[in-house]
Length: 258
Ligand SMILES: Nc1ncnc2c1ncn2[C@@H]1O[C@H](COP(=O)(O)OP(=O)(O)O)[C@@H](O)[C@H]1O
Ligand SMILES: [Mg+2]
Image (cartoon, rainbow, N blue to C red; front, top):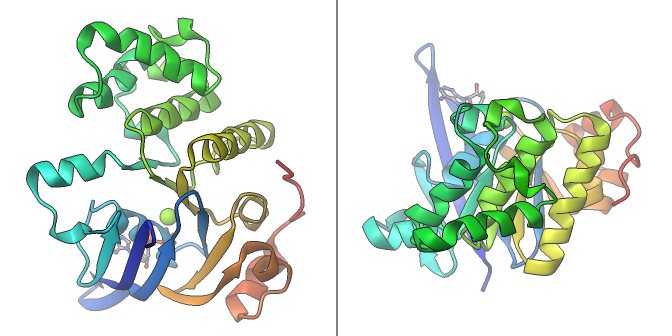
């Protein structure tokens, strides 16, 4: 059984009266511990798929099975419990968190909301999470807006792993970071995946990054799957028009070697 099975997912938006298929009949699976990348040009539907999988928006059609349950049918307590297993990291943690919140507060929230640790135990859990993502424990009382972009993305990853997820959706999670910090965050993600067998739905427009971290890749074009397969095979020899165009536009595909 796949960890995630998405079938015939479709989402339309209206633009100046006309329907636009942001996601058009997309199907894929993710296995436990696997990284599946979604790549494609801007506007090809990557973020819409992320939001659908996270149930931040509802599809017009299609099915999402997660850990063996019909994810779109879950409600109430069952939905909340399952949500703990499906976490997210976005491009800009400043937008995702209250910038005035402290690092400790950001990490305390999931532990509290999902009832993972009693109050007295949470500071110890927070310290362990910080250590797990390579941050100093004395960062805990600092405000989110005071720390660097790379540190913030480590906090976002710590928050995502706090609830022991089986799948993390990463939407352009390293795209805003400069190259050296980006490499460090990719190393951290790969280390977490190796040790904890977390699967990633890894969204990026950067094929160099995708080639370095993904097992499989789906290339999207205008909401549809243009091609898919083993990440290196697809990126080294793309068959689709959109794949060829993306590779031609990608500088130095071998830059990352985690
Ligand atoms: N909330 C929305 N309202 C209207 N159109 C949207 C909305 N979100 C996305 N779209 C449209 O859906 C398409 C896919 O967008 P998106 O999933 O954000 O692409 P990507 O993440 O690949 O850049 C684009 O044409 C975009 O303009
Ligand atoms: Mg996007």
